[in-house]
Length: 380
Image (cartoon, rainbow, N blue to C red; front, top):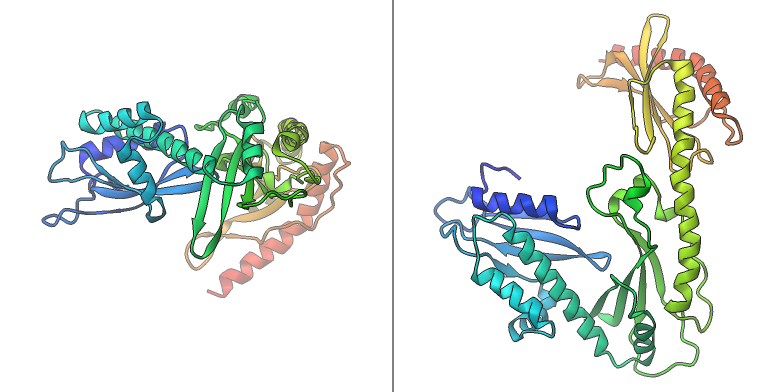
């Protein structure tokens, strides 16, 4: 976002929203509604996480009336939500707050846009809960009754001419503060793991209904510590409901998260072992220990060795990449090797042994890399 092209009052509210909203919101596009000065950007599409998907709402300011509150245009599939807000919905307190926020708009208060978006998102949650509660499906009504006590569950009812009706739940898992489990953690937003559960909407009771579609989701930054792609979901047994399934999943998931946290120290010991052979690292990830860079030399040839360390270390060996300090390509950038994964390795070795074998491997590999760099330079 260019501060020069966005009016200062709008820019202040937008920056506050992006930096202080409890979820990771993004700006998808910006454009101008000013016919006299089209370089002024006063409207944008806001992308808001909801139920492991995204809401896209257009926020429409008027740069010619800078003290006025913005209009909000909801997605085409949420026309009924607009009516829900106008009618007052069920959560009348939330509706009144949102309307008060607009009617008492203070363009000089940078918090106003964030407060408005939060109130509208809360209203949207109420709207979707009401839609799901009105579905004439015995199984869904039973499922909701068994998990209604859990906090933070988001629901979404989807339907359309070209797709069947279905209800999606996003269930937050683990009563753990993941941010506090990692010392020095840089995450600005609270990290969460969710189970997405999708039920087709049926009109009749079925004695042995099929399992719903299940998928794990998480906030984006968590992958630096723990990849949900590596989690194998337990089977959904016949006749099972969410209230029975979730404890088994959470028990297994908690063990894997705790193991992921313990593996940070395993990676740290590996980087420390590398330092005995390569010297002090030029750069290293001090929090998650996922990467490190060392300066190495083969005779007069100096180069960097980049280590990319997986969350599955030591089961998965690090990826290496060499970067010359003396050779550039035709674009003027340092020449780098392809990723190197074929070298002596055993996850059962001690960190010192791992480091020694990599160092021995690189003695020969450095000569090959130097030759490749010289050949690449001759070609241009």
